Length: 86
Image 1: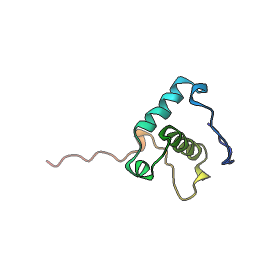
Image 2: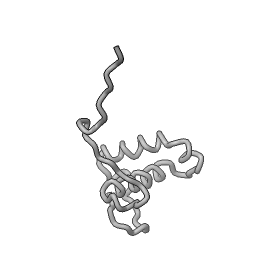
Image 3: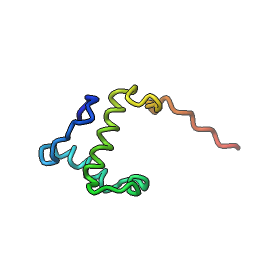
Image 4: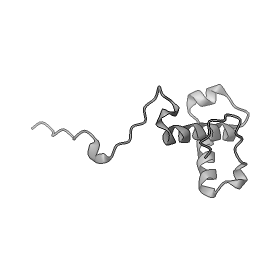
């Protein structure tokens, strides 16, 4: 993952990535969101790679997208399940 802010960074070819990262990218390319598909792409794998890179940057640096909030919670921090009436 590239964490630099240089938008001219070119990702390595999929062949040079480890199997897990390659599968992550290929899986994301197969499961584009409707709005991502609507935007169109000549290269869905490259589109998925770009989406995941952006996501990784936001996760690594919560200030990378100041208008969004990344919350990290554990299951202990969730709301308690209400008791059924009765």
